[in-house]
Length: 177
Length: 309
Image 1 (cartoon, chains in turn purple, brown):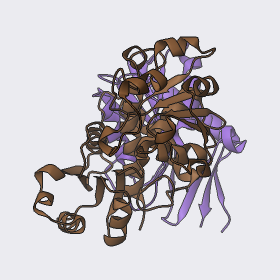
Image 2: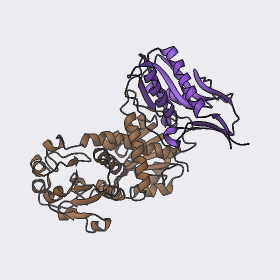
Image 3: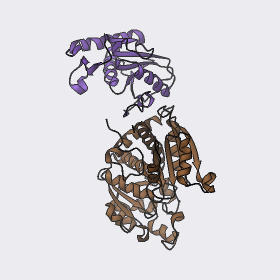
Image 4: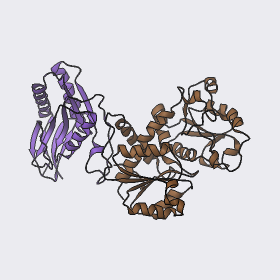
């Protein structure tokens, strides 16, 4: 079976805009809310959303950081992992945090992300935003608050998210491997 | 995905340029970690590390211990002066006994060159890190020196580094030479002719006996301590004479046409190889080296622990 396109360029933009509006609905003008993207691929999404939110809210001071979770993973030593840069130049104590990743699958990355987050203070509330939710495949009791698109997939399939920044176009495909 | 080419860190000589680059880039991530409000990550929480120090050490030992704690590893400390080594136990027996207690990694400092290489051939299922073996190698020091230079100057390629002092007895000098050469820096050694090994040029370094000329050439000066404890005969007439010829003072630095970086692996003998003014001055990055040491050692242990056998 050929690869199936989940989001094309047009859907992609509509979805991002919808996610931004949902965020604004809950967080108003982001006075006490920060956005944190998970390395490596979640940061493309968080940067995009951050940029769009700044325009929509007319607030240039929305805080946005990148979090690398390599040191907190539970599968370290089962495969070799190379860390990425963490860049959170602010404290999240008593702040609302929106954690952002591209694809939610087993939930293990998010579990590590929640652990890693605590090194930067005790947040008031943590929410999860993902572009693609592969439902019914969770290993842990973790659910997103904001979802771009929910899909049904089997273990052997792979979700590929391509970004304008690296691949030249925005596209999400479901691959059969 | 890139990974280390070796299971142990025994010396810089037997690792590749890619290994060094991987360690330095990982160290950059750990430097960010140790500057967080909560400086600890759980990466090595299922690993036990034994620190075997058969020779005295403050900086290296504390630095390794802190690095292990920041990685959440369990540690056992061992020093020769308070152990059964005094009762005549051999190195292999001591280490095998410690390994029988299920230790995953050993950090060892030993007064004899090659002790770590010897050990790595005798033990199984254990990663070994050399924390200094005699006058042979001190790989983590060379890596943290390389990291500190890279952090200050952007890259190591083409940079000119002069290592001043007791080259003959220095494991720091040898590891530094291997490391800097592999990373494409130019290295010169400077010191009294009696303290420069005869065949050192075969390692691809130049020799200069005039401190001022060497400093005029260099971007970085790494000042070494005179290791009186390793000198069985007199290599120079007096410490005072050594200081007059090879001691780095503010006056010498001010006389140079450019700013150079001053490094020292410690412990410092103030007023001998380096004056207090220089050690605490604006050119000195001695304390930054110490901070970077923790990050570099975290990177080394993290990468070795993650390495598949």
